[in-house]
Length: 383
Ligand code: MTE
Ligand code: MO
Image 1 (spheres, rainbow, N blue to C red):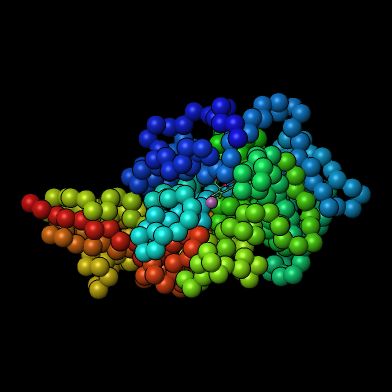
Image 2: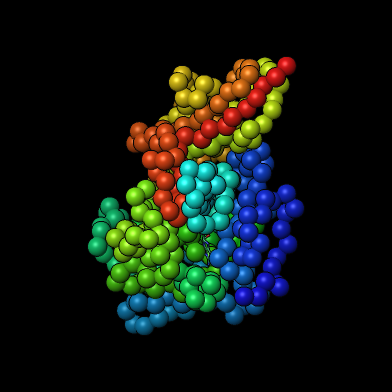
């Protein structure tokens, strides 16, 4: 693979792998703003960043439709109604490093910042599909229906040099309320190369792996995508399955993200001064479920109290309501008194009353995905 054409990146990013480029911001930087600045947004790649600079000749091909494939230019997509959806994109591998402490897992090691919250601008996939003759669908997503496969132009070693691919159910793709976008903007600016320029899918509420960057094709297919990242990766196995007894076909590709939270104002195993410290972080859930509350403990999880949620100005926030935005994270904060050697813990509860699991052992899985266990930070507070 050729990595000579990579774009410049912010020097403060923590690089977890250089080629392909995988990096996340520092904890404190991540929760400094409700909307994550583009240069601090985590970058998750499986191959080199494609060079697509002749935008006038760029088009995306829509296949598997009546009358044969259709090519849509960027202008065709820009002419459709534009939507701005604030959605948090989280990699399924977020917090993998902590999972490895229990038992070794395979994959890029991530701390707690393999996610970001952005306002994505683009056309709804449901409108794009309607334009080419595929009608809207507004019922609850049926299972066993057709699928919509996103195919990228980037070449991934795991795909044996083939393009990155993923699919979502047709019922979700054609449902305007699912807010699936073909995005050409991120935080009001033209999408950057690292994040899928000129066009990417954004599938809110679902693991980041399904939000395919640098779109080449969108195909309506009978079964879910047979691509590597759908069939041989990003599946959640039970703790009893290891590399010697894995049967990939026995599990479904992971879609919705479970409830998650992490503390970002403190580093693990750090020293602070006795007195007040700020416990701040993020909480989010998948599938459009909002965050009901975040509980904090300063004694490893024996006694709990509720954190405050806070959002910055100008951000969609319904006063008195529970969630700020259906697809976006909530930032939380609590001021606590600390003394001695203590363990601070955060756990979130979503609007369906799902709670993060307590122990990492109960959710350990060989690929190290979906580590959503209580987030613990051990600190030593001395005068
Ligand atoms: N799309 C392509 N074409 N190639 C990729 O490697 N990585 C996926 C997804 N889309 C990927 C991709 C994964 S695993 C994640 S978590 C998100 O993109 C990361 O998006 P970001 O780099 O914009 O943060
Ligand atoms: Mo990911």
